[in-house]
Length: 176
Image (tube, rainbow, N blue to C red; front, side, top):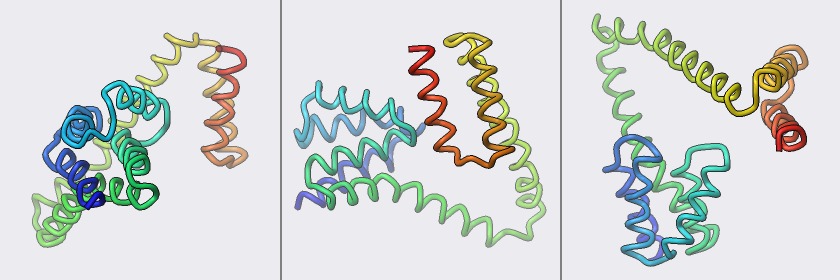
């Protein structure tokens, strides 16, 4: 029964929540703290703070932690699965719809605009990270980290995880 409750506690917020992880956190809190009482409000806030400090989507990290806390490894798997299923179903539905109408001129035009829009969104994200880095660490540190990261990734083909780890160590030593 606990697995079913975990599934519902994470499936419902993810299916009705709109706006990604931060928008569904209050819905998850209502389930985890209010409805099932698996955590207190303070423990949930601490879990959220820890989840925000780690990379990857917040909803899956919260689901994995709460699921593991409530029912071990099986609970973590069920909770993460319940978090991912709504997006998976919507993606499969959209893919099926696009595939069914792939010869439509409208769908072809729409598909042609996807890459430029994604490129612009990534450029904006890069600029906002760069601006935030300058504001928090200063221009010199931001340019140094960016340059070393670019050289490591492009010239030496270093794994991105090692580049991020190196930037974290640098920040901890020189900016901490």
